[in-house]
Amino acid sequence: MTEKIQLPPARYEYGGDEFVFVELDQAMSLEANFAGMAVTNALREEAIDGIVDICPSNASYMVQVDPDRLDPRELVERLRRLETTVGALPDDYVLKTRVVDVPILFNDPWTHETLMRFRDRHQDPDATDLEYAARINGFDSVQGVVDAMTEAPWIVTMLGFVPGLPFCYQLVPRERQIQVPKYVRPRTDTPERTFGFGGAFAVVYPVRGAGGYQMFGMAPAPVFDLSQSLPDFADDICFPRANDVLRYRAIDMAEFEATRAEVEAGTFRYRIREVEFEPAALLADPDAVNRELLEVLYR
Image (tube, rainbow, N blue to C red):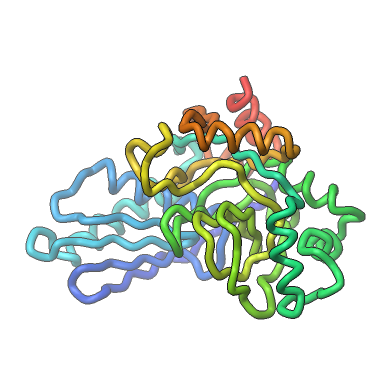
């Protein structure tokens, strides 16, 4: 059983006359993220005239307003009221979201080739990123750290710094969190769909570009589709949503190539199930709730 963290009072700040920034905690925790999701979900459901955008983050959130239609000070008063109701995470609060199967080819040849070109920027030039992660997290083998990353699902805590990039935090107690520092110096190249890891966060890089997270593998399916050619992107160029629950599942090369063929044919669909769960129940018994989430996904 994990001990519930008592969050400090939220800190409210204004960004000019268009933005309200709310910090729930200085440290990332499941409690802080759940509280932020509860408030921003409730705010979105209220459909208040004058709110332009709502952006949840790891342990904070920001709201953009049209000051000609909504006074930011009035918004803060509404947010304070939500903080004392849903943001306090009552035991019966239910989070409605999606659980998604996300296949990953670990130790793939493409990210391996890239990481080998940048060993001079890494903490351990004589090891691969997965070997380094396994060693510093106390695992005897690479398979051990892969098993730990895939046995329990992850929650999308925020999207950024580029469109579609999901920051994911595993739904396990803090003492079981895998943690790996970023590269000593950022790379100038990272393949599209790289499964990366930095701090306690897992990501899938939406596009090719610079990066500093450890490279563990590659996803065959995109998280960003500007052309919106795949069915899962019909409504949005970005597939992940904040508070999605993702199960990263290890696959072999044969499944990777078969999935890539579906992507290129325009027929690929993520395995998605609508779910509801109580954050209080997850914090009390994460293993039991995680089993239930995966049972729903693969039922």
